[in-house]
Image (cartoon, rainbow, N blue to C red):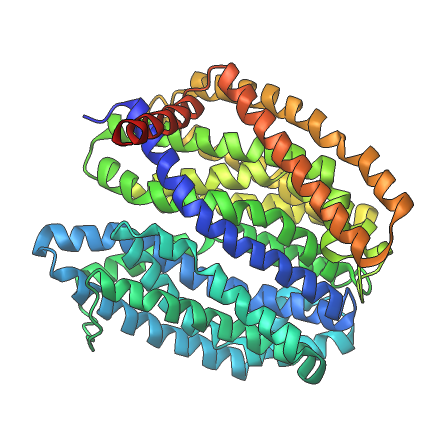
Length: 530
């Protein structure tokens, strides 16, 4: 049986592989958001886009995440009962049924855009609201393409092909970048919405050949009585809320921000993008890898091995998100300024986005750990508990928003998300312990203490950025200054990361030593072959 060390090293190796592809995608994403800020800034049009995106993205995210999450346990059961050949039947049937459901949602969105706009823009001024309504109508086809992406992601992750799903941000961001660079001046914000729809279609077209390579064959299947698709849909209903809590909180926050004046919704949009970039790179990789493993172990009743995988994955999340949180708090200003402050995005917008990002960054740990805990619940076919925890999260966030939004603006909205998500994490952890027994809490506390110690050492290195930045700003200006600051930031981050990893190694963190041992063994093998 696989021991705890092997579980940790396997997750570490797989996470490293998928992270490379995710990182490339997020580099494109960083460039995309920087271009968006340059072209559209934080004005009325960008406010409208962020509000419309919050509404349509929430619906499409519900569809994508729910399908991708419920696909794996459902298809595994279908294969156990009918053999491997059932996978294609199930996949094609789910693809058709989800497409039909998506078309209904698209029709409703086009016919009733005013009602959907109320989700995110009920407090917006009439001019902004009118643009939001138009953008929602144009953006609704994203729901159909998202359902296709969700099915293909599930198919590939079940087949152990994580690289392709990790790289889908590349075609999405390239679509945006091509539009922003070549067509944005002629088509404006409406074209940006069209680009967002075509970007999701590009993701599907990217995934499809990879699925075909491992055995997928498109076929028209319309079996509405299929028990496995029915089970997937029933599982998906509560998953809609639990996997999209961050999206729901975002849409609530932007709705309130829409009444805070020009630029507030855009500030939330940009700062949240920077915060979720960390989740998009690393945490997506971890959850994508561990979910099929957890489903096979916990779903088959192997609780001992399942808990080992859970322990390794949660620790890995902590090792990533704790230093990321500290790094974002320290370096928020230069990150925002280098990424966004140019063109239509003013220095005043940068100051507002910096403080909002710092407040958002406090949610990084809790959002990421909840993503893993939810997968554990789904693996034991419990979708109700994450649903109730998700609802609690949203209720707390809304309550805090109503209390603090008027006094603290976008900072209060972002901080509310952080507080609500942290409370939800504690509730989820307690309920999971009651459900499956001991979770190894002491090991998490030890890992957290060591991570904090290493992160503080890393933070001291990060602080060294600022005196060098002052020197650069004293002698340079314009694009050359921005390039030098970006180069300096990357060097400091790289050195800080090395200090962090070295600190973890010296503190005896097993997962880091596993990776070091893997590298040493590979080097020794190469030397012997040479």
